[in-house]
Amino acid sequence: MIEDVALQTYREEERDLSPEDAAFLDTQLGRKITVRRAMTGSGYLIDPQQYAGVVALPSGARLNISPRIPTSNLLYMLSIAYKFPPSWLTDVEQYETLWEVLDPIAEFFADLVTERIEEGLYRAYVETEGNLAAIRGRIDFPRDVLYNSVQRERTYCRYSVGLMRE
Image 1 (cartoon, one colour):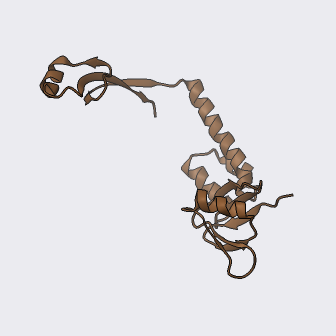
Image 2 (cartoon, rainbow, N blue to C red; image 1 turned 180 degrees about the horizontal axis):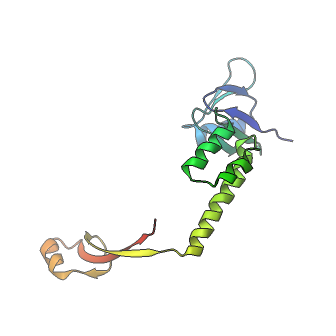
Image 3 (cartoon, rainbow, N blue to C red; image 1 turned 135 degrees about the vertical axis):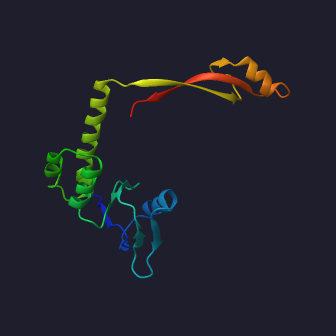
């Protein structure tokens, strides 16, 4: 059984990793997570800096990086920022780790997407124009001759751009 590696943000800790896992973290996440050999012992010093989350390692283990603040505080900040219903917060406070919280958050956002689709996706079109490298929409001949009479690598066009409802 492969054990998960638990870390906390802003705290460098020594952990046992396989050479493949250490190489993966260094090459794939080297700009975010610092990995280096420990001077004493056989492990690696891992510093996740400000990054929290879950990373699947090549060995099959997971690197679980939790924030320094308690999970309940993080959930409270998310609920305020994203206007979650008050009942949502009491439902997920029972979770201890960030990994356990991801499913309810994903479910909440999936419900929001479903709700938006059921309301109908609204699209408005805005007429715009520009001197483009490829023809888009219809050619505005008077302006095309005005702007591109000498060099013909561009064409002045009028076209519609779709905007989604916010």
